[in-house]
Structures are given as structure tokens and as C-alpha cells.
Image: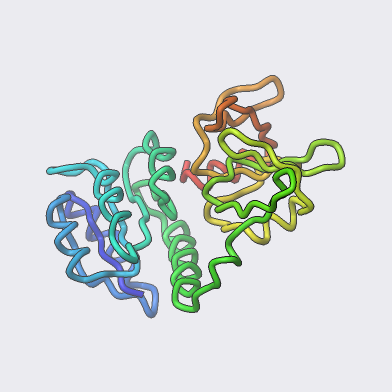
Length: 238
């Protein structure tokens, strides 16, 4: 797996490069210290993944990620930063993971494992229909792109899928949906819900703990269990 490391602080960059080089089969093909140099290196090397700082001279890492998204076959993006306040914005640009400084060997190893799985999925390829979710829409069958799904949840004995402005009853179980959907983008904050992390607006206190405010037309609230909150903190690196 070929990766690029981008950070304007040489000590942090050196530390991360050292940790990455401890993993067999991983090659750091380039390093960069600002947004401009990062884009040049990424376009030249076409790596599998990039470890990207957010606060940098010449443009922040979020803007670099948005530009990468317009490339054909863009690299997987991992943000590596000192601040947790950008975590939700990072997932909005489809970041694979969010590492906080100082880096721990365990967290870096978890991220590398996740990257390897995703790179292998890209190389083996999947039929496009395998990634679609079929739902009934009156007399029609609609094929939803997973990115359209805000959340899925149980209502009594039924399971519904909520997009921005529609709600569909489906024949899937939540477990069945979870198996079909990308585990990087979807997780279970509560036993009765499955959410798209890219559609979380914010996390707010609730009577029995916390709830997620989702990015749909109703600003839907999704409850978070204690184990769900631990998973959120793990995903956000906090």
C-alpha cells in the first residue's frame, strides 16, 4: 500500500512516517509540508491513501480533500491533526479515519487495517448493483445509493430508511442492512438504529445521555446508547 504524509510540522510528520514504516507492505512514497506541495505529490504519485493534516500554510487539509474528491480514483483520506473540532467536517468529505496527535501505535495500526481492507475492496471490485439498496416506492422499486441514506431504524416491527426528504419501509432487517452497507460510513449508535456518519449534524445532550441530530429535512434525532457513544468517540478519535 502506497501512502503520502502531509504535515507542516516536521516532528509530527517524522513521527507518523516512523509509525507507518513499522508495518510491512506499506510504503511512504512522498511527504509534503503545505497544501500546494501536497496536491503536487498526490497527483504525481497517485497513492492508495494520504495522511493529511488540517491546519497548514496555503490552504487547509479539508480543502485539499475536496479537490482530491474530484480526481478519478482519488486516494483514501485519513486526517491526522491536533484538534478534534474538525472531526464531523472530516467525515463530510468522506475521510476514512481521524487521528489525533500525539499519535498512538494502536490507533495508527487500526487505521492501517481499515485502509488495507478498503484498498483490497477497490482492487477486487464489486458490481455496482451490489452497493445499491432496493426500496419500495409505491408501485416502483427504487435503488438507493448508500450515500443518500441518512439513517435506518426500527418502527415497531418494521424497518424504515430515511433519506433527506423521504421515508421508506423496507424488507431488510437492521442487521441485514448493516452487512450490506460500508462499515466505514455506517454504524449502530443504538440497537434500533443504523446511521450514516456523513449525515450527522451534531451530537447533543438528551435526557438519558446523548442523541444525534441528523442532516435531513426534519433534523431527526437518533438516540445513542452508552456503547454507541464509546463507538462515536472511537470513530472521532476522542
